[in-house]
Image (cartoon, rainbow, N blue to C red; front, side):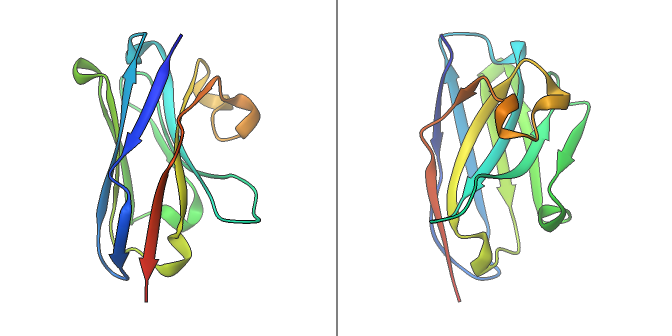
Length: 124
């Protein structure tokens, strides 16, 4: 069974940066395409970013383009999300996700494994 554990969330001022990490255990991370989602209270879970098995291909939600960067280090079994120029509307719980199908990953029903989530709060 694949287990995912997010870290790096916290409180940051608008315009600041955070780097989220997702550590995988139980299985080799390179087996999966990976992604990040986020969910604010009372809202649906939203696609943030995706990365293919060895990192050759990436995809981002429209509001994240130019600000967020997804990356992975398969040797360390770790996924990352670098978030720059943060805005208050980025406030949400951020979830790490794994899928056997990169092209299905932007949809929540395409995810095989979820992390527990880490809170990101951006103040104005």
